[in-house]
Image (cartoon, one colour):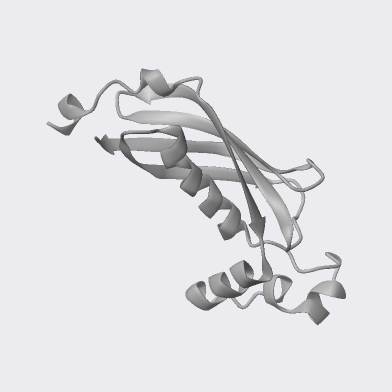
Length: 140
């Protein structure tokens, strides 16, 4: 049984990591190409600048991708994956800004399921997003 082969996940509770990444125009363009996301808020300077946003913004899928990418740095020596990400966007982040993801393992739901909280900040250290992610431990 898989659960019998998975070491206790309680050792991860309390761990916190931080990653910093500049979100560039190329990131947004590549994501639009891969996902066929043609939202002008992400790819069209003229429309975005004349909107209530005032600029092109980082797609939420890039933020959740950064959160998912941070998980292996938090849960080391284990295969794991994000089961569910619940993300509240507080303010939009413009392109060409540094984004910092703070990920903190706050609890053990079961032997193979952890819960982590995250915050995403921009250059100004303003909280742009926050939420939770359930992390499934697959094995070692």
